[in-house]
Amino acid sequence: MSDNYQKLKKQLDLQDWPSVYLFKFIVENSPANLAKVSSLFDDGADLRIQPSKNGKYVSVSSKELMLDVESVLEKYKKASLIKGLIAL
Image (tube, rainbow, N blue to C red; front, side, top):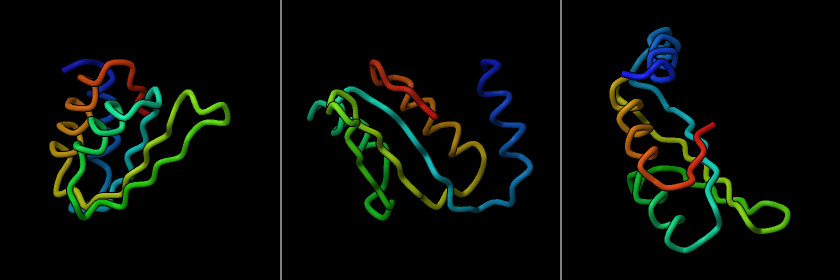
C-alpha cells in the first residue's frame, strides 16, 4: 500500500464505521470521464457535478454510506485508474 493510502487509512481509522463519506474528484470535462467517475458510485449515492469556470474540468462530489475503511480505500483505488483524475 502506498504512503498516501497509509496516511488516509490512519485518518479513516479514527472514524466510526459505517459512516457517510464524502468523495471529491476533479477530472477533465468529457462524457467518457463523467461516465467513468459516475460508475464508481451506487445508485443511492448523492452525486453532484460542478463544471469549472472555463468548463474544461468538472468537480464530482458524492456522499455515500460506506461500511468500513477498506471500502473507502477500494473506491479510491478504482478511481486512480481513471486517466487524469485528481482525488481531493
